[in-house]
Structures are given as C-alpha cells and as structure tokens.
Image 1 (cartoon, rainbow, N blue to C red):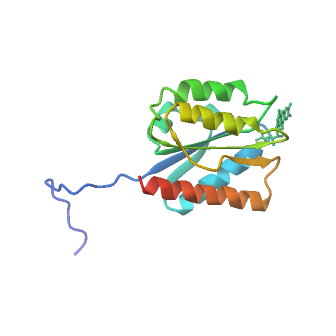
Image 2 (cartoon, rainbow, N blue to C red):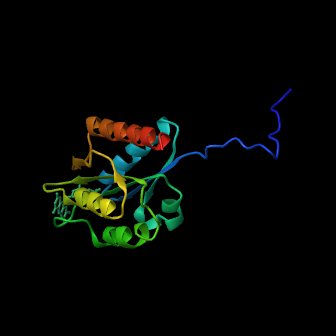
Length: 161
Ligand SMILES: Cc1cc2nc3c(=O)[nH]c(=O)nc-3n(C[C@H](O)[C@H](O)[C@H](O)COP(=O)(O)O)c2cc1C
C-alpha cells in the first residue's frame, strides 16, 4: 500500500524539527569536550544539534536554532575578546530574543566567562537555563555526564516550545 500522499489541501500543522547549536571557544580542548558532550545529550533526545567553534559559526546557524549554548574558557578574569565580539555582533544581530540560551565553560580558578555569557544572553532577551555549567580544567567522566545531562535538559526544553 505504501504511504498515502499528503493532499495539497492538507492543513494539519507540521512541526518543523527543533534545532540546537553548541558554540564554543576552547584553547586547549577542555571547553570543546564539554561542548561535545552537551551536543551528544541533545542528540540522544532526538533534537538536531551540532557543536561548532565560534570561528566557524554562521549567523544563519544562530537564526535557525531554537536553543543556543555558548561556551568559553576564562582568561584574565573574563572571556577572550573574539568571543565577546561574537556575542555583541553575531548573536546580537541574529534575533535571539525568546530563544533558549545556555552557557558553560572550563576554567582554572575564577571562571567568569560563562557567567558573563549568561549575562549577555539575558540582555539579548534570551531565556537562560540553569545551571551555568562551569568545570575546572579538563572535564572528568563525571563532569562529562553532567554535560550530557544538560544536553538532555536542553532537548526537553526545546521540544516543549
Ligand atoms: C594565560 C592564561 C590565563 C588564564 N586566566 C584564567 C582566569 O583569569 N581565571 C580562570 O578561572 N582561569 C584562567 N585560566 C585557566 C583556563 O581557563 C583553563 O586552563 C581552561 O581549562 C582552559 O580551557 P580551554 O581548553 O577550553 O580553553 C587561564 C589560563 C591561561 C593559560
């Protein structure tokens, strides 16, 4: 028999697949490990997601995502200027108001960057989820499980939009 063709007059609302993007800045790979596990958690809950370095992130990727997670490690008590520029320019011009925001990052001793990202996301009108996930230096397996859990939470929130 096969599938019935959808009639051109078909008026039922078709839900477009939800999408998330996980953007990161990572100098030695620690924050990238977090980004990869968060992405894995999102995908495990059947939401389309990819982890991308902020250098390679296109404004269109941000515009088309329902949830945007941004991660950065901390340097000299703040985030590195290129990440700040990404938030102030790419994110600010992408119309992120009302979208889900998540911030995270690896740090050494003070860990300001993820908190600063969350503040900027709120200023852009995003709905920032808890927790702001900060991991000291290289994530352990336990830390990566926390990242995975955060990814699953993001997926559940996106599905309920
Ligand atoms: C030059 C330098 C400056 C740093 N400054 C800070 C800092 O101010 N506060 C902090 O918490 N960690 C600081 N760190 C530690 C890094 O945030 C930490 O090593 C982190 O795990 C790096 O993650 P990444 O590999 O994702 O970049 C600094 C590290 C370096 C090399």
